Length: 164
Image (cartoon, rainbow, N blue to C red; front, side, top):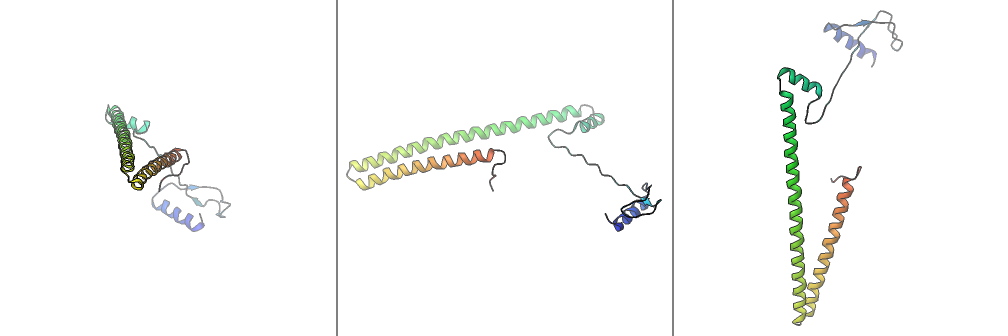
C-alpha cells in the first residue's frame, strides 16, 4: 500500500467517524510520530453443506424454537430423496445393459445362423461374409466396452482425467 492509498483510507475513516489510532512513527513510510494511522480488519466465515453451521442453527433455534430440528429433518429427507434417485438411475442402467447384451447376443446368433444357412444353400461368399461381419462386430463391441470401462476407472482415480 503506497502513501496515497494510506491517505485516502485515512480520509475515508475520518469522514465516517471511524476510530483512528495514533501510533509511533511508521518506519516504512517515514510518517512523523503522532500521525494518524487507520487500522482495517476483515473477517470472513464460509460454510458449505446442506445443514447450516452450529452457530447459525443456534441462532435459528433462538428465533424460532424447533427450527433446528426442522432444518436437520429437511436435510435428511433431501439426502434420502437424492439416494433414491441415484439408486433408480443405477438400477435402470443395469437393466439397459442387460437388455443390450441380450439383444446383441440374439443378433449375433441370427447373423451366424444366416451365414451358415447361406453357405448351406451354396452362397459361400455371402455366408462367409455374414460370419466374418458378425465376428468383427462382436470383437469391436468387446474392445469398445473394455476401453470405456478403463476410461471410467481412470476418471474415478484421484487426479484422473475428467471428460471435456
